[in-house]
Figure (cartoon, rainbow, N blue to C red):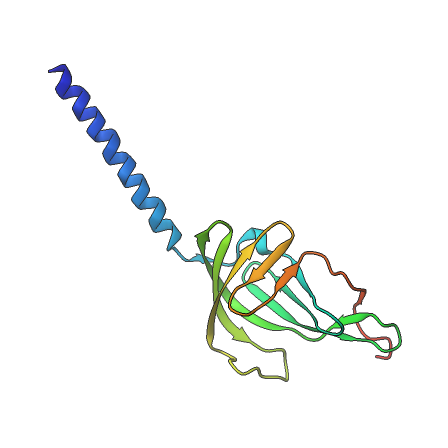
Length: 153
């Protein structure tokens, strides 16, 4: 009788353990609204020469573009951004996320995939965001001098 009770308790514990594994693996495939909190900042691509860019993540939107260099001050300023709205994400594990959203353009312009859903993957660390599939690694800090707008505006 005692062996049967121990067996049933062990079976119950094993069943709960398997159920917990199934739940956690199902969570990985779940889409969450917005962006991961760890990603919500401005990130900078510190490319060589004039090849510099930025991307900013808010709660449910991303905005990014390249920097233009001001000839008078030799500082860089942001060009109007475009990006994704209505963002959602999946956690793929080990700080890797799949993001998906509807592309939008700044007023008066239209990018190639305006209004279409785009999806991409990133890996986030404390100081970097690495964009997969041919994109670059962006840093938390700009390693070049920036300003809000060009001097002669």
